[in-house]
Image 1 (spheres, rainbow, N blue to C red):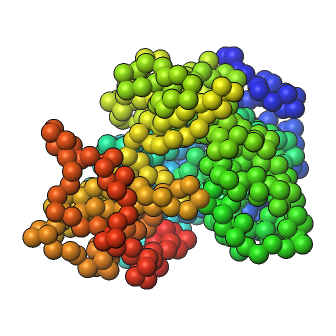
Image 2 (cartoon, rainbow, N blue to C red; image 1 turned 180 degrees about the vertical axis):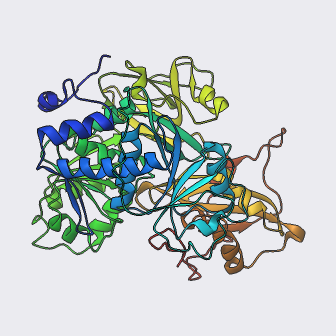
Length: 541
């Protein structure tokens, strides 16, 4: 299988590199047994050798509980050492890891369980009460990490097992290929529920290689959980390159610089909003007193270069999706304002209009992507052939995102052609939020759109039609939604109108609602003091 290595400094590490978790763990334990590959802000750390041994023990326990190769296994765990070890152990057995957000509840939780068709779920014991009174699909076995809530939760319908001490059960040697599915990552839907992105080992490997702000010897900060592609790729970085992945529970502006110093971090990935928060802090003579050398920032706003100059850091940017493998990269220190980068080797891009015709330089078109190695991007969506066929057609992956490009082949993001919303690093389906709004007894019509938020990201505006056109108390509505949605999915803004604008075929004209945006009669719940936060398990505070 041909593979294109685009960064010469990595050739000695990446040529003939193993492409599966099983092979990488075995290789690293032999080649770099004492190298610290993983460390956590909790104080735990793992060398290549100790990581292999821990994964083997956990894999043995999973095998003894019936987990087998090519089986989809759900993982519902907060960020931390165990969620990372579980991902590795599942892949070590040859099973397919399906991690999902600990904030999920209600219909969204039910959708993931049913869509995956998985029979086994490894869950934090504090979450399992949410399984009551919902359709759990084919789920038949709970493997509980810790015994919290075990006694007072009805588990009679499941073959419940408690995962405590690892087992040394003998494992068969799996035959795993690079094109096999390694993980499923649920990402937002566009006109329907969230989709499970199928990620092969080759797909994840390629994505890891193409993040060029990291390399051998780096310690890369990972602030995203294992149910995000960013968390998984942060782990893969350490395994592939012989670097170290430094996992933190979550990003914190006030703790950022002390954390990177304590963990000796040399490379970071930052959302635009994170950059704004860090730049807003008072300047200090100590601003450059830290170990960070490089950062990848997306989107690449006006303050990205200023961030690099102030803190003495080389900055890069990129465009990626869970389905892709970093087709665009910019840096170091790109000067094209707002760029997402230029195409990497091994990919072909084009921008097309609504009829599929390629647009000229400077014109807006949907970004289409294809790779010389077809397994270096997603091979579809789990149990969703219609969505797979829609995205992967005519030999191209259709991103649903609008771009322009200039004569130097810089690409610039314009807008989302789809109705997904990105808020604080979370992808949100407007469809799913609308469905929960419509579950309210007083709401007859609902449309959800993105409005400008901090750092180039989105906030959520809900436009509602109610019975007798009577407004609803925002505090009560927020409470209603927060019991049905993850905290980050609850709209910040609400507007009540008499009728949604529609086409002759009765489709809501969301472009009109987006253009109108926030009006004088829009209610900002945060201005009313109604602010939702998340605890360690994504619950509301």
